[in-house]
Length: 108
Image (cartoon, rainbow, N blue to C red; front, top):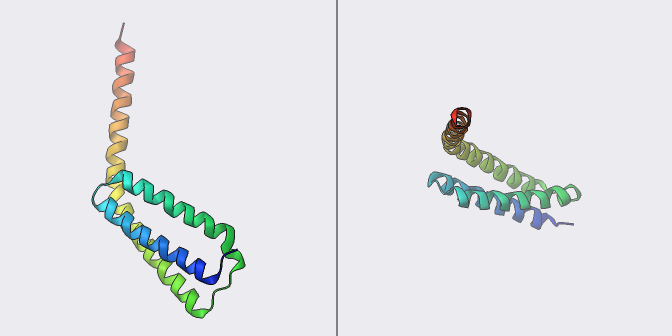
């Protein structure tokens, strides 16, 4: 079971990770972004498994809300940066798949 402090510390750590993810996405450091995503996922799973038993006081709840809003804002900015890259990657994959189909269809 997590304490109030551990819950807030986990949200703080997640907030720091999303800030690092934004920097990684801004610099097109996709491998780093993936590593940070896994770390966020680990924290989220820990919260999912333990947070239900913790009741935060008023200041703690407010801090949690601020942190979540900051993470959501970072997430939006990260998506804005990654969506064009994902679209380009999808086009490359589709192009390669089409080329492969054509080569297979016309090869002897």
